[in-house]
Length: 303
Image 1 (cartoon, rainbow, N blue to C red):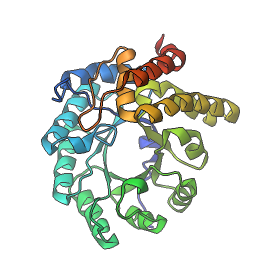
Image 2: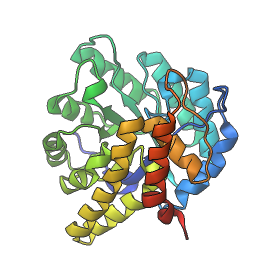
Image 3: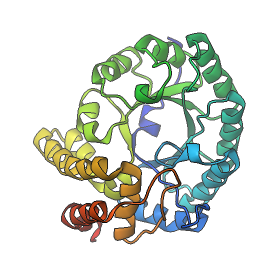
């Protein structure tokens, strides 16, 4: 592989996959980004992954996505690392968003592979190369096989990592064998675990950190898991993962994104609803969210 400086230490860590606040009528609520940033920074996370799946990126126009990137960078004011998800089905749109991220002062961009159409491996590779060359920022490939028309193989990912501007992978997959093989073959790459419920497993297999939805409401738990593993305390890390997974079980039952926003509101950070076609929680779902928030989350935010 090409020789290049390792970004792992600079960009590793616990990154919240940021939600996007909306008003009740569906308009962006950019004013809510400042209190959201303060709430999450207080949990001790290392950075934010802005504009991804959790941020309902594909329910927004490109202009709205660029607005969120700029407004959130202004809210953080250099206090955490920032990765902008700029993925789109079209290369030009992704490149334009990458330019907006660079202008806003992000540390890196990331992009899911172009989806829906059955693009060939050569087309996917050309997409990423053009995107990497359209911005001065390093690029993290978003590997999410469940949402990809053509999942990226280990060989595909290693070939992409040979490009001098493509420096890592967000690995949202249960295939931790692939994660380990990637890290073994490309130790200079930064690799993020993507499934919150497998954070400890991902780090144990070599990930440099994680990017996750539920870090919005329990980032402190994931920071503590990471610290426990660094200290060699596997039992503590496993106990923390079990605690987080009890919350995740409820979110999977009620809907991860609407449920996360409901939890944030209960914790004092009102970011509004999700955009349609996401639906509001039913009374029974809301009750389940209230119970798990009271039993598992409130104490995390009392300082």
